[in-house]
Image 1 (cartoon, helix red, strand yellow):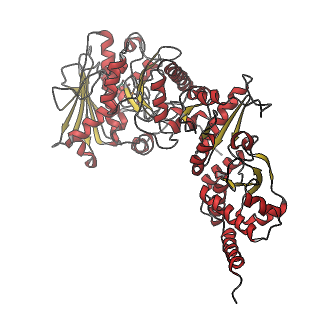
Image 2: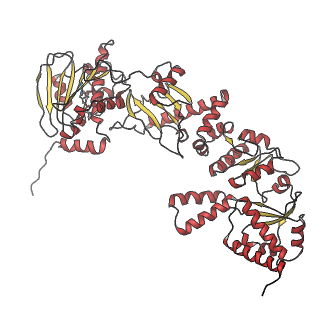
Image 3: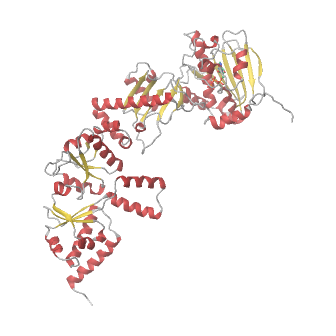
Length: 620
Ligand SMILES: Nc1ncnc2c1ncn2[C@@H]1O[C@H](COP(=O)(O)OP(=O)(O)OP(=O)(O)O)[C@@H](O)[C@H]1O
């Protein structure tokens, strides 16, 4: 067996790499345009270092006839050696070397001042996604001659002398047939430039037009922002009227600049799609960076420059690194402070913001105590006493020492929309309100907000407005001597599917019926479940809701003070009068909004026949 060892260089199949870039790295076909604008930007920035007055300019020219798209800048340019070393080496670029502090001193000119965008040395190659051939003609400002560099994705590179007279670089894309439209359609290129480079601090001109395509200036990036100007700028740029503007300028622990605003658009459900635009060194990275803002702030829009964050290689997202988490923490704290101050200084505006985005805020407040504190004075619940904030509800809910020994405050709530009117009537004579929480997250928000108070030593009891809740019957309904009905009556009334209680009321009513929404809900879900109609994700949600708050039952109180009921109860079930009572009970539940269970409907028929028979006698 012969022994051998060889040292071979890595082989890179450029055409294959370009395929990968197109298919996996970049999600859009216009990415190479952004990359080339970025290279021009970096070259101009490097030239500005030696000439602070230098403004620079980028020109994009479409040549429909020849199928060419060219990018020209008057930046620092490349020497023939630099073109040879850096243009044709995937993964190596002067920009990246400068940023990493590895560049020769004459290249870095004072080191990275943080204004260069490139870093990976792959951007130029992305042009092969669109082009069969790429031609770079460049002249370094202090070089004796200009250079021409030409290559196709799988070809050798041709280097030659160029007759370019001025400093700068022109990159020409000989477009693939399927991308020829990029040389023809002006609007496409214009919107791509705006999409990515609207705020780049260098004018970009298309097809020799006098006016630049990009806006460059945005009021929200100004070092000393004027809120009103920022508001107008946001309004014009995002085409909506902000409900509130939050100018942002943080230097430490990480620089964040820009402005956010409360959108007047309602965000459906608990959406997690943030729509804040992010720039890094003014190049737009994305209009939808996820997880940047806290989950409760989905109603915010705006634009932020995150100088300290690193774009991913595709430059369509940010790397989730330490800097990113510092930015998210800083932003969350800043937003909390903004809304806390707004609650103090302009409670009405805060209330209207909360009202506009109430469901996303209430849902998110379940996860955040600090947000709950803000909502306590700005989130209005519908109550029997009109819309009230939690603070107002608490102020009105002092416990009556006559009935309550343990609780300092008792907050009554109702979860069933169908009994809203009825509950409002019951509470109208009381100083304490009844809070309507028709959505389960509102019920949880109320419960969590009361629980937050326990730490301060206040015991607030949250009770559902139903006869089984302690002291409801006595304190609110004025029902005395409430007790469960004897077993024989429970049995007799079992088909109505409700808990049967007996009590004495002041009013001249035979029965009172209370619905329990959860019970009705649970019944409907049970039916759906049996039919297999509920998607598993939804089922899990429902199960957890019922686990946290077990379903109760509808309830009926028979009034023993009512002459007919007292006569009925004085005998055993089975008399015609007891059948009349059963009909009245079903009717009371129906009037409250409950549906009649099937066995009760059947029984209704039998009850009616039995009563008729007793009235007229059996006809043979
Ligand atoms: N218009 C230009 N003017 C001057 N030099 C350029 C120009 N375009 C490219 N270069 C040089 O070519 C190198 C490679 O460019 P490329 O776009 O591949 O990578 P990059 O810009 O360094 O990094 P990234 O891939 O992150 O954009 C750059 O670092 C720069 O030195």
